[in-house]
Image (cartoon, rainbow, N blue to C red; front, side, top):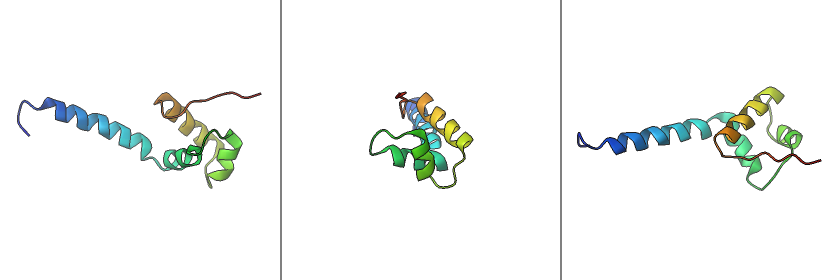
Length: 75
C-alpha cells in the first residue's frame, strides 16, 4: 500500500463495520430465517433456538437500523 492510498483504509473500515454487524451470532441466524421472505416475530423466535425475546428485539432493531431488514406491521 502506498502512502497516498487512503481509500483502501476507508474501504477496509466500511467492510469491517459490515462484518461486525452480520457476523454476530443472532444476526446470522435471524437473517437465515428471513431469507425466504417475511416472517412474524414469534415465528422467528421459535425458529432461532435459544434466543430470548429481548435479544431478538435488539437484533432486529439493529438489522433494521443498518438497513438489512425492514419491518412491516400486519393486522
